[in-house]
Length: 127
Length: 157
Image 1 (tube, chains in turn blue, red):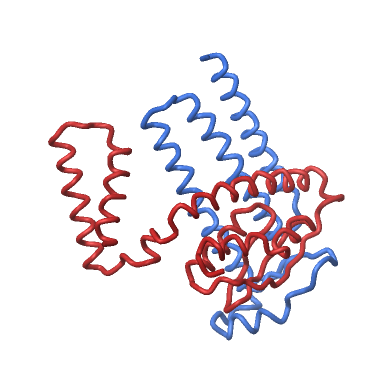
Image 2 (tube, rainbow over the protein chains, first blue to last red):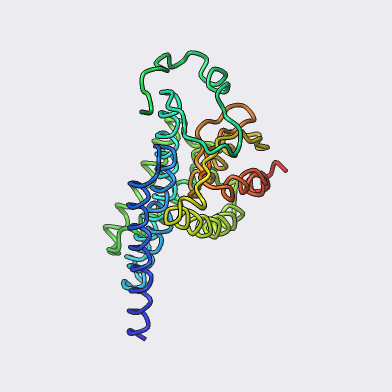
């Protein structure tokens, strides 16, 4: 039984680490900030699920498992908020995403949504 | 009513975190939970957003479905990282949302952000501005399946 648990832990943690590795590779490789946010999202979600899942298997059925579960639950609630704050700040600062001709450009929404609340539109340029 | 609910939730969390169950410590726990409940009531922060008990069991079911979606989306993004030439098609589009309440909108927007491959960039009135990484993830938002589910959880269908 212990052996099965150990193997399950190893599998889950190794796959989690693999996803963290892909996240790092994606962060370096993707073309602009918006796409890099997506790569970072992997470390927040599946990678942390798998790593904490592996730790929970090792701790057995105890209060530690409940605490690990709470860590994942709080990550679940806070990471999208942080990601949204980052994406929104980038958008407000006027950084244009690099698109691939698929889907429409959203240039005109900027003036609609901001209403001059943040006047520093031309502050940052992508390149 | 909600104050009592908050105190019960707080005490359950306290029991899970503490791990020391002697009468003295437990009575300290009860007293501090009641104190926090009273403070929160005085601060007037206990409402349908601060303690959304009205969502009930449906939100748990929704979370289970969301975790499955997240796993699928993760595999999609991982493929995109490894073979960017084939899959990388960033897009930026506006999608309609059907939730009426602020809480529903926030749950939907955060669900989109939590799913790798799609990020909510802006939220105004009935529109949501989304940046998507691949064609598949963009289709996921445009199909409106998640939107429907959140609306159903919120009881606004």
